[in-house]
Length: 405
Image (cartoon, rainbow, N blue to C red; front, side, top):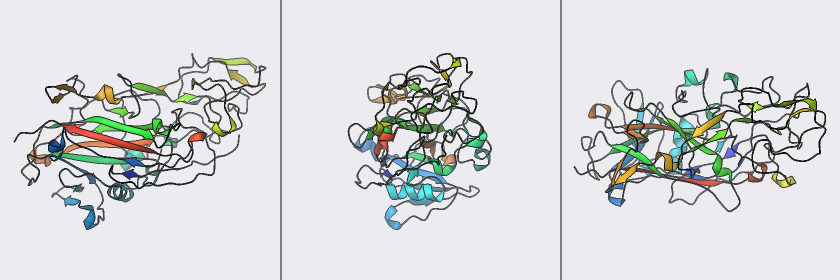
């Protein structure tokens, strides 16, 4: 099997009002591929009026050199080593602001490398990527499988580094009025993600479907016990899951990869190899959709790692049904949406809230805190050759209840 190196996906975060984008070129076809992207992050309240009550910012362990034109106000507190930056109440964060934040903290700024969460169920343990000590020793996001390594499943040696993905320590405050002072904020206010758009730049492009966001709700110990992965492209009422294991054509020769003992390789996470044949393959030379992509033929310009042929003489898999391929569960916009009654938002299940955060007390400066880690899930079937050079938009809408103070 031929060697390959990880490829990078160029991207940028852009406010909805901007028209700029980052475009890059890719020259190689690799296992988990590279693209050119743009993205947007925005937020609002329940209406134009309520938007003026919502203030967004972020926490940073390092100081960030913002320009005066960025209009980011700095707050520091005695005994606290973080720097807190806020946009004006009701204002959004520009691409320049977001990229300065990512760059200062060592995360990807103009590219992403397709990686994976590995197997995951809502509420599973997740290592905070902002905890550099723990992240270097054990973590959740992992690099792509590589046939040149001695192993084919995931362990701590394959952890994704910060330059593979983006992560934000977002802060929210709810003001009593548009021009608030330090005492004019409201505690105990919940905030929901009520709209999310991840769409490709043009028709017949699908890389946006691989976007994943881990929502880490960190305020008020014990309040949120079941954080989750969010898929902004999912339209399911109940969320869904991504298989994080299967056969791959990493070598790019049209055949599923196999090891030195002529055994086809299940990459990723699985329980057993019970479905592998005990005799070498002697069938026809045609593409077989073992992974369930829905593709049974592959043109030269639409090749992907998920669809391949069985090599003659190799001990092969006719099915993976009994191999226990593991999955990563995710929530959809509909599965985390709040209930609405007479214009008031609330969690559908009070025991398992889907609100992102709740603003803190005056002692905690009225901060609502939520970390969002953003990556491209390499096991999503949209990660294919034909998407090289494509890009997509991301829009997020945060919503609060009306505050009558």
